[in-house]
Structure formats: C-alpha cells, structure tokens
Length: 473
Image 1 (spheres, rainbow, N blue to C red):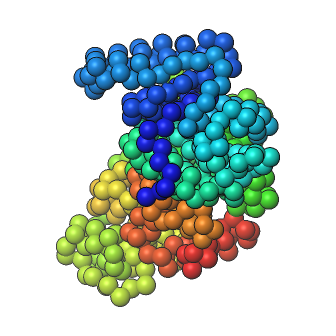
Image 2: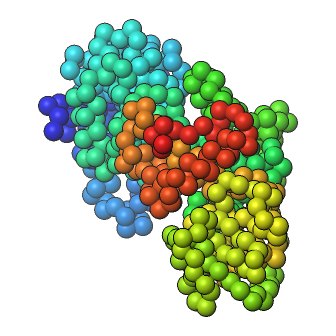
C-alpha cells in the first residue's frame, strides 16, 4: 500500500466540460466532497444541472436510488475560483502552456502535500511538470469518455513523478470502481499508442487498393471488434484522427512505423471528415453499404487432408471428420485434391502452388473472412460456417496483419517500459473495447508465426513499418 492515502481527499476538478463533469460525478459517487471550477462563467453550474438530469434518469431506470443520487449531487459544489484541495484533477484544453499556467496558479494555492492529476490524453506529463515547484506531485490520470461508464484509467508517471503519488492515484482509481493501469509518459501512453495499427493497416490496405472499406470493416467486425477501422475513423472524424497520427509521428521523431496515410490526408483535404461532414469513407446517414450476398458452393473432392496443429486445424478436422490428418505439416489448412487452402503466414497465394488460396485468421465461429487466390479452393472455408470474401493477394490479408501489428506495438511498449503485458491487455479491452488484449491474442496464436508474418510483411514493403519488436523475438 502507498504511504500516501487519498481515500478521504477533498477533490477539486478544473474544467466542467464533458470529461470534467464525468470525473466530478465519479468522485462524488465515491463519497468525496468535490469542488467544480471552470473559467467560463456559469459552466460549472450548468454541468451540475445536467448531472442532476442524468442522475434522475438513472433513478428512473432503477440503476441508482433516489437517496444515492441526491447525496452525489449534494457533494458537488460549483465554485467561482480555484480552491484548496488534497487532489486536483484538471480536464481543460489540450494545450501545454495553458496547463502549465494552471499548475503554477495551483501550486501557489495548494498545500505542499497536495496531488495534481492531469487528464491529458496526449501531452507528456514530463513536459507538463517542467517549471513546477513540486513536479513530483504531478501525475497523469487519463480517463476515457464517457467517464462514468468507461472502466479504464491510465495512471501516467512523468520523469519526475514520485512513485508513491502514482501508487496513491492508482489505489484511488480502484476505489472509484475503475481499472487503473500504470503507464510511463511516452507518446500516446498505452491505448493511443497501441491502437495506431488498427487504423494504419486499414489505411495501408486502401492505399494498396487491396480491399474496399466495407470489406475491411466487415472482416474486423467478424473478428470481434465492435466497429471496423474505416467506420470508426468516420465516427472520430478524419481531421481528428489524422492530427493524432501526425502528433504521434512527430513525437516519435518521425519513426516510419507511425507514418500518416496519404489516403487519410486526401480525405481531410477534400473536407470528407466522416459523419460530421456527411461523407468520409462512406456517405451518411446511410453508412457502410452491405456486402453482396454470396452463394458459396463447396465442390466435390476425392481427397481432403487437414494440415497442421492448433485451433484452426482442429476446426477443419471437426467439420470434415473423414479427412486425413497431417499434424506434422509445416502449414495450417486443407489440401483438397492437391489444391492448398492455407492459413496466411504472410506469403501471398501467388507464391504457393497453382490453384492455392490463402485465408485470413479466423477469430470467430462465423462471419466474413478474407481470402486471396483460387475461388473454388477458398469455397471450402464455408464448411467452418465462414463467408469467404475475396480481396487482392497481399501479405497478411486483413485480420492477421492487423492483429500481428497490434501485438507488435504492444510488445514494443512493454520492452520500453511503458506498461507491462497485463496492463496492455487491460488497457486495450477497457479503453477501446477490443475483444481481447494483444498478449491474449498472442497466447492463442504462435509467437513464431506472428514473427514470421511480420518478417514477410517487412520483406514485401522494405521499410521500417513492419520491423519486429525485440520483445517478440
């Protein structure tokens, strides 16, 4: 346990916007006396009035008692000026100098033992602490929107943050019903860094003209993601997403792994920003078009062999009980009358035997699954309850390359001390609702297979983008 205990802390929340109001609600529901301040006249009062309506709605739905709602509201006091507190959480504009000016004002007011937590999502906590009298008392406390519902809190330590301060905030977040994870202050922290390949691989596939946006989205939704990357970028706004990518690129000294996409830049230049402009990858309000219905006929075969070991091979064997099983094969999939249907390992179908097809990583029992190569050979995917979707013959297809790159980025984050493996898994599941964490995916795959796929992507593209993390090797 930390020697610093914030369980009974008086809390000041600075910034009464969506994030600040949500933080105030969570702190008040946990029993803290909360002061809410905003430089905009009337903003704190308006935020409390809106919160009263929200709490009334929760009472009406039976999710909160009337007594608990009244007590929560009574603990929040809008104030017209900065006040002394044991813990200050700032949720103001994402601007380095504006935040630094606020911290200077706070240090002149607060007792020496007070903790200042910043809800920044992108600015270095180390940089924010520069010039402070007590930089060891500053820590990142990055909530996710909507704050009352999202469980994750990234507890971000800058170079000067005292370990006991970070631990005290970690323990406090847990008491508030959140799932905290420790992170080191590096560009993007955990979530915004590890998530970059989810967007970047879709954009690379579009740049390669490998697949339409709706096919990419459908395949990743079938893999368990709530939204595909193209529809998610349309929701976020391409101007916002592109700006974050550029920020991460610059903050990493223009490491080519984070290179922004010309495809997205063109959308921004055209003003096709997504939902808010009525057009992005898709037109709105219609959204993604439906993929065409397929009638997949499995051809007859004289000889079927199931190759390899692992979950995919076992699924084929269960679906084709009369097939021959070759467990010692160096690849996974089917041989149908000599034609190979192979789980992608990063090689293209054109590099294999004539009549071959490669298929994507099947993470679900049903749904759309990308393939490249011979259509008749790929039709055998339907025996697994999957819908084969043809795309260009590129390394790693859609799901496999995306998951492999998410694993690779998480591995780099761990190797650089940004977080540990458990923290990476928790952050991605709770912060962006991934169906699994990167190291959970790795445990269900094969480390050597992931490295081989990334190496083949690297060989194909000849750049730094797909270099393999030392942590994986």
